[in-house]
Image 1: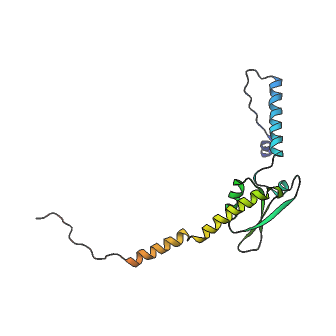
Image 2 (image 1 turned 60 degrees about the vertical axis):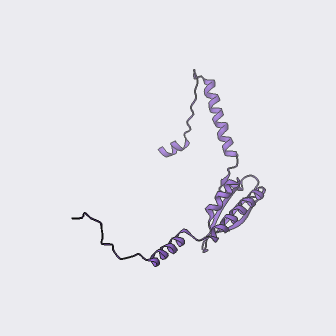
Amino acid sequence: MQEELEQRTVSISVQSAKLTGRVLKAAIAATLRKMEQERNTPKVGRNSMKRLAGRDGGSNSIEVTGRIHSFERYARKHQVRYHIEKELGTDPPKWTVYFKANQADALTAAFKEYTQKDLTRGSRPSLLAQLRKFKELAQSIGRDRVKNKEHGGPEL
């Protein structure tokens, strides 16, 4: 019950010399306008399918394999509204990205940048592979096991 009340509660802070009914009415009206505007403006980034297909429908889709989080970064950078669904039972995982048809150019730019970065990532060796290689190289060189017994201590 308490959580339900907290979710429905809105706090408004007004700074005025004298709090009158008109000032309170103007503050509440401004808050309601802002809430309505936030609800109607399209949200950039990841959306629900209901919100994405909300007004005019017409969404396109594209399949992405591999790392989806790095793709999301580029999609948000190009201000694309999208929805992602994972195809179950596939290995490696496949993701279907739904986006608005009028944002095809922005999504193409984001996808182009993502694939360019992904291809360069695949061509260089991983950090762990490099570490293993240098570890083996260090072991193959070996150390000089002969101890030097002259310490140069005090002479008598």
